[in-house]
Image (tube, rainbow, N blue to C red):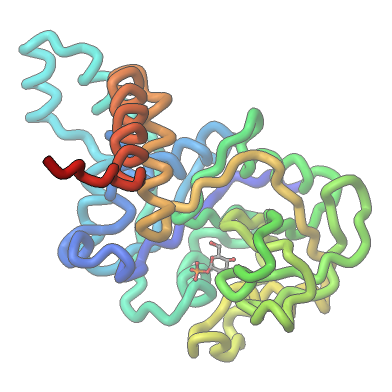
Length: 303
Ligand code: G1P
């Protein structure tokens, strides 16, 4: 059986939800406390045993390449000053087999994945979206790779979402549950309205795909939002070979919009050795202050 060795990270989006921060900067470089979001994704891939990663980039994405490259000046400076801990942090991002390709005309997620065709060749591979940070004992990407060892088929990570949110996601019609949390999926639908959604199980940004997806993507017509949707291509692939869904039970942090990003920053901050104690104290005090503000003011007594 062919091993899953490669991952693709689409990162060509314009990041409009974070404007003006993303006018001249890649949204993937926005940090959660002190680490760019894309570094979390790369770390998940490496922990899962992925050997080569292709990042599909676009305009204003050079900082991503620089981030994973050596910075000799900075390293020499930290060495000279004996800042070994910081030096370790700077160096640990450079030991990765990263490859880059530009998507000149962003035409949707399916189109971004199609750019990886030559890099992937004839192997099963992983797609990881940067808007979702996943936490579990076994990394989610590894969980999909473990499934592949028995199913030998495409397997897409899904999670239950509130029913009113189905129009933000690809949604599955789960079909038969072949083992706990593993579905032999009937249909995949991109961003259905709640009244049309076949379930509340949403695609959450980790995919294991067989290489046949590329032939499907090559002829995929634009779908929702007039974009070439990966979900539509997976639905067509499912007509010619089995596609499974793996229900994730760990914790998902959505850093794709402002509120999700802020919540993630706070929760990661509360785990970060350098700031956690101060942050906790700050949040508790802030809570008291906000509560006091919400109390009805006692009427002023007249003299
Ligand atoms: C993309 C996919 C969607 C998936 C979502 C997960 O949508 O098209 O199927 O559920 O990622 O984050 P986007 O968030 O890019 O609009």
